[in-house]
Amino acid sequence: IMAPSKPTTKPANPAFGSGPCPKRPGWSFDALKDGAVGRSHRSTLGKGKLKQAIDETHKLLGLPDDYLVGIVPASDTGAVEMVMWSMLGQRPVDICHWETFGKEWFTDAVKQLKLKDVTDITVDAYGKLPDLSKTNPAHDIVFTFNGTTSGVRVPNLDWISDEREGLTICDATSAIFAMDMLPWHKMDVITYSWQKVLGGEGAHGMLILGPRAVQRLESFTPDRALPKIFRLTKDGKLIKDIFEGATINTPSMLCVEDYLDALAWSRSIGGLDGLIAKSKSNMAVMERFVEANAWAHFLCQDPANRSNTSVCLTLDNMGPDQVKILMKLLETEGVAYDIGAYRTAPPGLRIWCGATIEEADLECLAKWLVWAYETVQETK
Image (tube, rainbow, N blue to C red; front, side, top):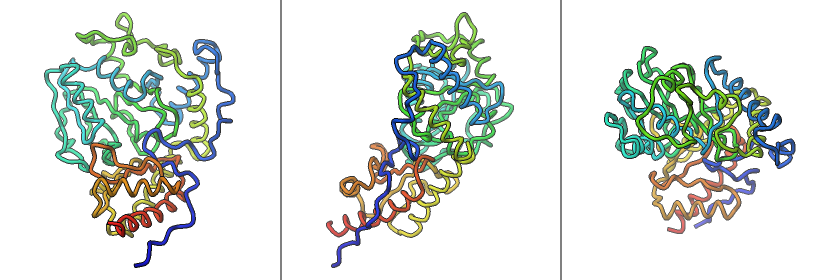
């Protein structure tokens, strides 16, 4: 029996992990040379860079003029938590989830916030999207735009009523900058972190508030204690300084500089449209790979709901141990790092296809996946 033919060309960047995600093409530490290192984030220089990050984010996304952008602690998780603790409890809540991280918001609402009227809108297995039409426009709605650990996204926002009474709170961390999320007015709160599609660093969250969210903050006082890093109001009014570059706690000015570099790169490739197009082209490589190899399958069977960032695959005749062997082969060859499925997902692969990934690297990886799969099968 002939051994599988090993490819001779390797990806220029073998990093295909889903968070932290690869840096932009051509990135080097030189990108940080103008960082406000050693300077106070409250100084004119420091606060100016934070305000620049806010303004450039608003412009790149094309947000409505009355939407606010702020930099908050603790990554996307911190942004979602501060919103849940500050805003929920006024009316019933529908929480839509279909994978690990979305489920955490349901758990927090029920077990930590101890909200009394929470509807669990979910699925019975990874790879599926729940029936979002079950949401009630009179309720607050919490949902994840893209399920990072399942490769399942919402196809659109048509299910959100323009006449809703409740708020819509969207965890957008692995979708924003890579998917068409319009129209923005369908979402009252949007959260994300720098370390996904733009390849930034972790630990900082982004919080986007529409006018209805601000109105909730200024009209509702939750019956619970709020830690300092969750507080968005003072004396019943929004702390507007948060959305002008005055952060709640000390940010990393080195990470801020890196985010500014990512935004500049985004503009250089065509802005939001360019970022989305790049991710879609990357996804097309994976679609061709699955079509060409009968043993590879998308975990999400419905193409309309399939993520074009966190692409999740299952492999025939591959249990957890075989998948680990396959990944070790690729890692040893310096071909692919961090591509295993999330620990609670079915055994398989999760390959990041966001905009910082190069299409040529994915095409190269596809050939190595065939070699690795065949090699593992030969040794069984």
